[in-house]
Image (cartoon, rainbow, N blue to C red; front, side, top):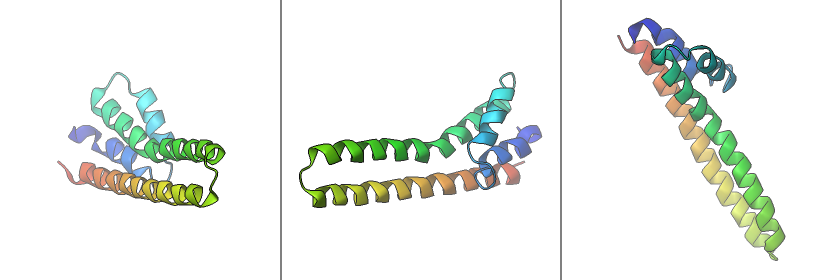
Amino acid sequence: MTRHRVINSLSYLSILFLPVLFPLIVWALTGDDPEIHRPAGQAFWVQLLPTIMGLIFLITLAVSGFYMDNLVHSGWLAIVLLAVLVLVALGSYLYALVRGIMYLVSE
């Protein structure tokens, strides 16, 4: 693992410069080397999770808007979903930074 620690670290730290795309490229090109392939896949899904959740929450809010007859309830739902999304995105961001630094520091 020490041999590939820079590329593994860059897969996670790419959240700073090229999120989702860099780990996807590394994941697609390193199918024969599991020491790089697995961390790149994990970094890809960690960075893609907030986007997927954001789309699900947007669809949920749109569908609930059709069925809720009170605009206040729909507004509160939007605030709660946005708060959850912010927490997940912040957690994903911090997790990617910590994992990237751990790969660089490990020997």
